[in-house]
Length: 89
Image (cartoon, rainbow, N blue to C red; front, side, top):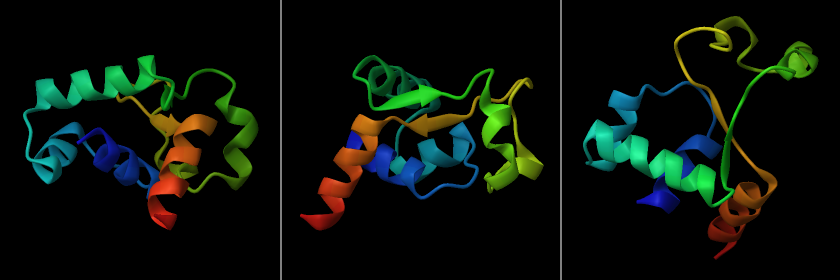
């Protein structure tokens, strides 16, 4: 499930936790634990302050949730390498 979650994040766009949980066939609390596990393992990171530097080229610029109640996650370099390895396998 963790690999599938990373692949969904890698596709980009916005996905609610409810949507991701349904797509993966898990509960929302289990999805939240999976996200936290991927953060601890170094595959995901939350976007936080300083993101504004990338806004001009960001495809999410109009719908950015930074500073709001939503959480925005992105793949780390380690996560990108894993996703690329899965795609080529």
